[in-house]
Amino acid sequence: AQSVTQPDIHITVSEGASLELRCNYSYGATPYLFWYVQSPGQGLQLLLKYFSGDTLVQGIKGFEAEFKRSQSSFNLRKPSVHWSDAAEYFCAVGVEVGYQKVTFGTGTKLQVIP
Amino acid sequence: DVKVTQSSRYLVKRTGEKVFLECVQDMDHENMFWYRQDPGLGLRLIYFSYDVKMKEKGDIPEGYSVSREKKERFSLILESASTNQTSMYLCASRGEAYNSPLHFGNGTRLTVT
Image (tube, rainbow over all chains, first blue to last red):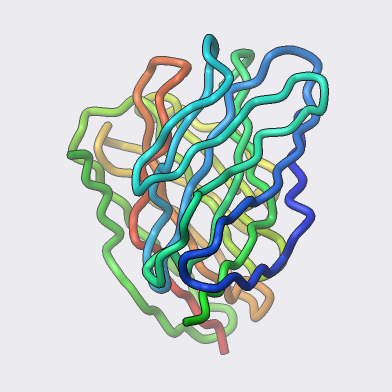
């Protein structure tokens, strides 16, 4: 069975600073990887996804993520954080077997300070 | 744009009550899901459905059941609500393609007293 680890529960960055949120997955084959964002009181919105090909993927709102097979990681990055990026971020892994179950990490809450 | 609508934003129920959480999607998606979200635990899959009248247990199905009589509607049922079912419940839908992302509703915050 697949699993996802987000080691940082809470991260605080200054507005304008760069951001990296960590995600490690466990799965025997090539997984399908996603990052979602959840603003307060809202459902989850897809930021970006990786299935194959270029290991650096671009998403919405200026986010990008890099798939590193050797490290089983899919870290999310943004070069300059805006106050509106304050939210909770979830990494997820999907698999192409059975009913294509998607497993989520426990989330990283991002606080942005002026 | 895909729209997933959950009928209630907030719900307060008493212990032992039967509770229905409703979810409707407008994109003709085959797959629908119910997740439970708790602080520090992320999203945990309760049940999912890959077709009308078809369902599969997720990771935490105990105390829950589901119903999918029409393709667009997926209901989560708490047969006898308990306080440990106080949580945020998220419905999602997804197309048939294996690389389709999940589309989420805004959630129902259920409090059981």
